[in-house]
Image (cartoon, rainbow, N blue to C red; front, side, top):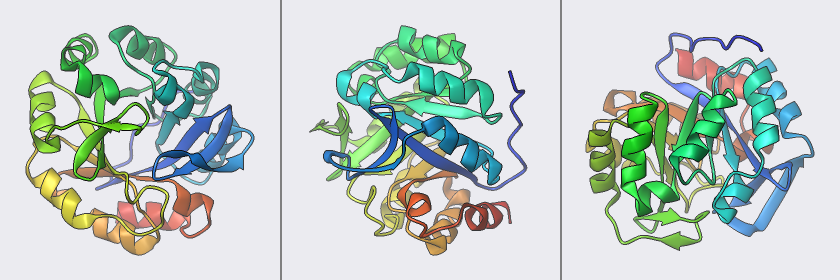
Length: 252
């Protein structure tokens, strides 16, 4: 197994996103499974490509798992986690402590609970107690409400109140995704991210809407508000943003 590198001294970590559906590397528009664009037949090769390009961490999503309610692309994710040489965080279909444990045992650095965190918060408490510093919660926001089940449903809950509850449970951080911007190349919802980060006391990783280097610059200005990372997907795959440019800006 390759020993994973530590994160460099950086004000913000850039996470190239690898979304896996039917064993392929894809992107969705606004989380819509009927709006799929495939970018590679081989997610593992794509992971190596981003690491070769300088990425110090990767963000993986099991889209099949998110829809089914249990991990499906375990083998692909295990291969990436064990061989890519950088820390890997994974979400999609993790609904219980056992599911989290299975990924962590495969070499994943952090696991991300989404639907389970909303529907059964006690699971988050149990997982955080058992694996301190390795459990995160993904809050995927759709029309101001957290979405669940692969973004197919929404819950009538306040995202900030949820984040505060998760903070008390000891989670390592929140991944904040604006679904309306995801895969749309329309820019990050900076105002919403700032408001969220200012009202929670957890590290926040931003996802959704990155279009170009200006978005990276705008998000970096939120570091002092508690933003620690930025997930970039379609902008990289579509060639609108070069990974090196994003990494260089984040490290300045």
